[in-house]
Image 1 (tube, helix red, strand yellow):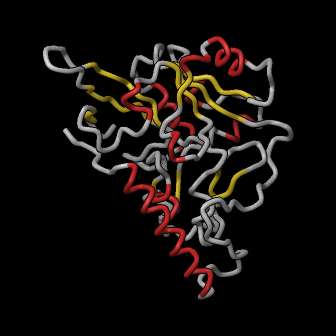
Image 2: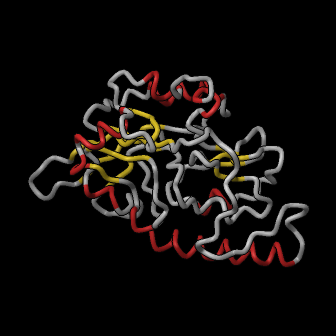
Length: 256
């Protein structure tokens, strides 16, 4: 059994430190031919073109998630990350309910939150990590130098350095499938219908209708980080809202 001991306060300090490193890198010309990015907390480079007029988001209904890992497997088959590395997974947690009560077992789907204010973008010294106008955050693997700044800056532990390519990797909302009119692999394979993806700009989209129906129970992870995540949860226990990491009452049972 393992515990993730990183605290939200540590994540905040680390992000500031990385922004200072980027400022030094650009100042000494280490960013190469890429446009120098000011290392200020609110800076975001201009978004690149995406699917016109859309803003994609995902809704995860934890009441329907059974922890079967079908999403994890289908994502791996579709996107072929190295063995042992995952773009999305369902982590199993044990939540202490107090003395005299049995711990609650919670299955929590985790993935890139495709934030509206993604902290992973401005820390990239070569602008390999970027955001499209439809909100999808991607990595240009031909530009990425594998420095890991974005991995450390992400407060959701959603990024990793691919063992095979030695570049940053993460969930892309299967943008190649969306552009072909298909659903992301994780959404298509979810046996309980727990995952829904859609256009947040379309009031009639399924994701907006379901969020409206459960508007009083919509939560996001770590709202205090002000990243404006676009992965929403229904049925997310309060113990998880402000960060699972470092909480004595929440224990991660296994890595995957």
